[in-house]
Image (cartoon, rainbow over all chains, first blue to last red; front, top):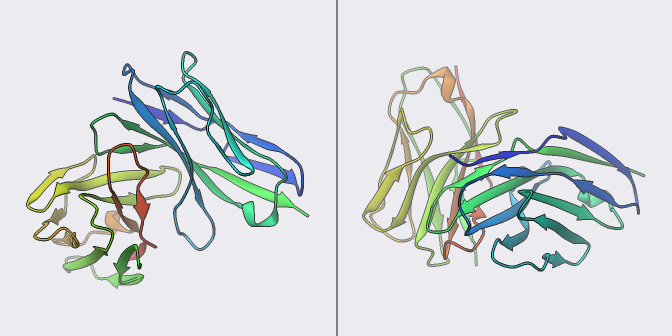
Length: 114
Length: 112
C-alpha cells in the first residue's frame, strides 16, 4: 500500500521569504499523480499544484513550485514571496494511475510571520 | 457554477442516531468520494464511486453506507452513530483520474 509522509508538523516563515515543505512517499508503481492541497482555517481543501510522475519537468503555479525527485520518491513544495494568506495546513497527496483513492500525508501547518 | 455542495455544515448527533450527509456536484464529474479528517491522520477514504450505480469501499467504510443513483448526488449515511465517528467529513469529485479532486466545504459532525 502506498504511504505519504510529511515529516514537518509545523513550519514558519517570514512574510516575503521562501519556504519549502517536504513530502516523501512510498510506492512500487511507475505511473501516478502527486498533489499539494491547502487547507486554510475556513476548512476548505484547495488544490495548489499537481505533478504527473511521467513528467520530468517540475510543475509551477505562480509562487508555488515543486521539486519532484522520482527516484528518491520526494515531492516538496516551495512557496516564494510568502504572503499572510498562505497560512494554512498543507497536505501532500498521492493518486495511483487508474485508482480512485487519494492517499494523504498528515499535513504541515504553515505560519507566516509579518 | 456551485462546485461541490455539502450539507449540513455542522451536526450534533446522539449515539445510535442515524443521519445522511448530502453531497451534490454540478460539474458532471464521474468520480466522487467521501473522506473523513481526524487530527494528526490526514484524510482517509470512506467510500467512492466511479459513476452512477457504482460504489465501492475505501479505507474506513465500517458504519457508513453510500449510494449513487445520479451523477450529481452522492449521499453518505451513518447507520448508527458512534462517538468514534466524530470527525470532519469531506465530499470530493473529479473529472478524471489525473485531475485533482474538488472538495466540498466539509461537515463537522459531533457524536455525543
